[in-house]
Image (tube, rainbow, N blue to C red; front, side, top):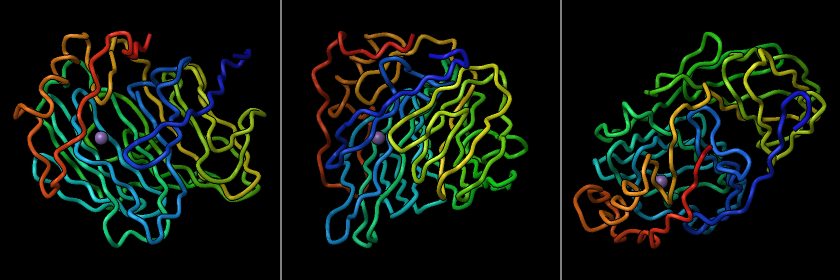
Length: 298
Ligand code: MN
């Protein structure tokens, strides 16, 4: 970490269903960014003539999943009877609360390319036992800022606020800029942020931004000075640093090892996680609970 406080974190490779993804969060040196606790970036992958994404039914607690696509189509099915195809520029937000299960699969008509994000937001203590919920938004607020076009899919950025329900102060946005674009984006100085490039190449304070590298920015800065070397798409996430001691294990976010172990015991045999509508697969078994594999954010 230099004097600016910027930290560059390389993605690691992870397997989700039948896909290999770039896992940007949690990282060894950076567990959370605001309430954001998980970030996978996948593709662009050619899925022409193939099955595409196949993530069979699995459970979640204590978090919200944010599905955001740059190319392709994904079909969401969950245990509270939602069935929703998502396309680029749209948002699927699933709030796990005390328990839900879902599957994400490429529909038969899925196009040639698949490229997108799976992000998780940790629910704060006051919201984490709520009933599960699902929201879909076909359009999100978009605004220009100098050479940048900002689409806010979660939380607020400047005057723009996503209609999606969130439970803490945060931002999740896609930023597009043409080659040779240079300018500053104003951000909340009491928030920490992370920024990465999904397509193209850019620079922030002289730090090269390329796909597969996340740049962490601690609180205390009010702008991001960005310049692009190609047509570039960024993702920005941020929020107030978490003050809660969250624990993560497998698909669960909680506060104690016992809560996480209980969720693993409850899946898939109890009715806590329901049954995923329209999916005949019996579900991904939980790995053996091992407290040594807990991800402790701080
Ligand atoms: Mn999931």
